Length: 128
Length: 249
Image (tube, rainbow over all chains, first blue to last red; front, side, top):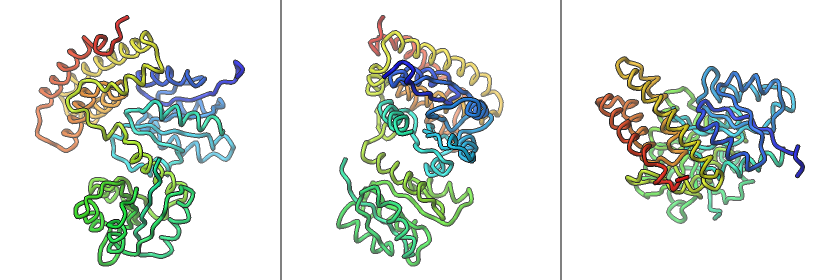
């Protein structure tokens, strides 16, 4: 693996604790993390840069994770097919099918299972 | 991973075949039942890994079928509802009735497949969310997992940040409880619950979760007392987490 061969992951999560936690853990997988704390920032950063994967919390301020996912999926370019892993404490008790309906590839319920998360990150960054 | 079977209960032949076709990649055996009665017979012979039930069926509808499977047969596998209903009241009804999930017709193939796959995985590997910690302060499994990804120094930074953030939340809660700011209170409790759980503070996560539920259900509680209980408990655990986690550095 060369030094430039890292994966660019956009982490959308409004809690800085979880942001930093994910940063730490994903470093293990040679990921370069960009943070976004609300759904609008996710969309803005997604427009400007190319990422390999998005990890998206559902309860984001301004634009929630489901709306942001739908917006990304509504694009016509190859970029709009970026893998999205949803994470949530599921405060509103939404059915899991809603997350997939919005276009997420995977969903993980909080508290996070880190091994499982790494497994999913590997799965999607390797095939994309 | 043991591959068991999926039972699809639907009175409509086309729907049954559609579900079977979409799910065939999962490599589970897929058994079709035309009615709740037939489904119960199949389930008695062999407990499946997952059950999909259409809600609108003649003679025995999806709710009755659910009751008989869970109460009469005592089966505890994921049960998903498929329904043509789609307004938001109905949506809540299925989950509160006990269904793990529901899918609204017409179901797109990938939504059906992803949802079924999610629940199959949930039942194969017993997830953290369904674990009971009893009255334990810490969930050592989560903490040990974290220790594999971060060294004690880094971990300590994360815990310190969590504690600082949580304390700020407590200040906000103290301020909010004087008014009717339930949305904000719930949102804060929810964040604490998630963060505490992710860092292995099992009991704190549980305390906030219980309060969150009580507020949502409109239970008669004293919010200041309950908040104080959580703050009091936290100050204990926050003061000696380093020792408990063997993070002495």
